[in-house]
Length: 436
Image (spheres, one colour):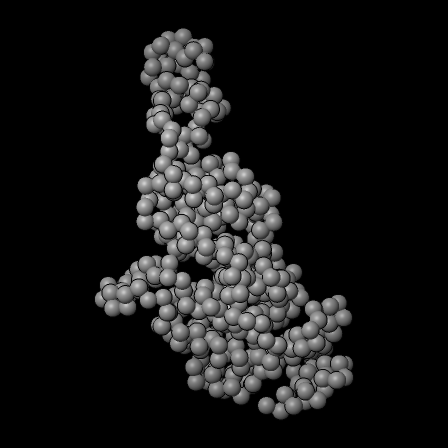
């Protein structure tokens, strides 16, 4: 679910760019987003669609010089139990929902996730199991500076502290693009800080409060939030929830003419004229798009704020402290599950076993795919084993070898040997690996 309305609100900060521009970046990937969407969209006759697409997506990322770190789901927070129960009931029926009660263990998803782990391990790609939500671990790694950004469709990542989020990576090789969202741009251009995003999650709805605050509209809430200073949003909500208003009742909005937008109905203006438009009776008003400056409109945002405050106060079941703590507690930065392990050499035979048994690929097709994949794996491993970012020198070697292969000067195996010879010390390691 994520945060209701969030993506449409931050859309002005979106920047579409070719995935090739992410060359050299290390990105944390919320694996579950791809797994769930692939199993829902791809035709049922395709065996293990989540594994198939995971392989080809990983290949595309490595081909573009991106260092992927796949983050796996852990146990969801107890706050999410209600949402997870509804999802199980929608998918498997009400009996399933009552039988599993309010479990947040993701028992049905664990088998699928283990399949993904086995495939990625066979390819030598790094995986990390989060203590809790995968997007929280992605955000934690990004906030720490361990990765350059996150790939996810869950806007919750910003609330957990993510600084850069990449969304909607296309699968079209002729138009391989993604959408980039930067927290710096969201804050500077839209005046939406992290604490304001958390406030939006509470008001509009999120995984931890699915219905949000009943009766709160998107536009009125955004107008109110825009008047708050960054860093004050959560304290304001806490005071609203704990303290009853002393203010007088909110006055009703007086009728306004649909033509001139001034106080008074269209019928009254047509009959008696409008003082602000200086029109006489039976003359009618001229159409206008200008804002009204009557007393009610001058205090409109204040009245909207009072109305929202009253609704927040009445929502007694709202556990504001727990929701804020889930998103803001700095302990959650450690959700990454530990230190990122070094890149490991792939096991070609294990991959072939997975491809033929689970994906139902013919052995020659599987071998063809992994052979095409090998050079990118070796190049990626060479960079990460030496603990240096992708440099211009690395890209030069990379482009030179691939160009040779495309021109028919080298086969995949010759390409790998060429790389080993260029790098000297790695020759023995790559020779051992090429014998798998």
